[in-house]
Length: 156
Image (tube, rainbow, N blue to C red; front, side, top):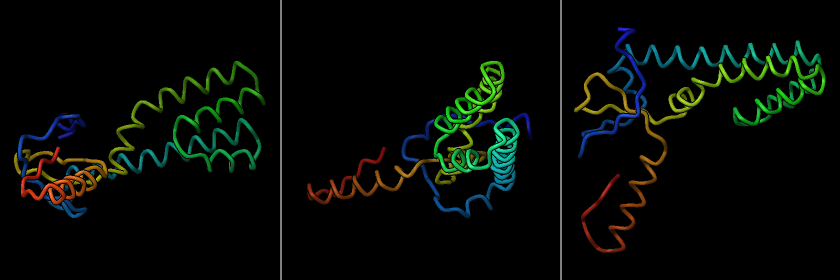
């Protein structure tokens, strides 16, 4: 099972049959378990990075400031900048390398943790992870169709 699981940017087939709600994980329990592990692992990584920052900076106020920053890129820049100002270039270069390595799975983890989950009958072994556009795009299209007085909906 591990070798077959992958996260892809595969597009849905034309006119997919989607079932969208959080309970779809119950229909794909193996994927749900892996998604849970991805989210839990990332939380563990973030906790460890906070501990590394505190070890390097020895400054609880700076840790609190970093934790309040939203977005991986901004937090990383703060982390590296603070370490550089306190410990110098050598440690900042090491920290930058660690953060770059850790950042590789960050975007996919973000998609999974903050995505709208669905299943597609045409993809029986998959789980669809969409962003909020799956809802807002459909509403915008319904409003357009209503304004044009047409029953034809075109959903991307």
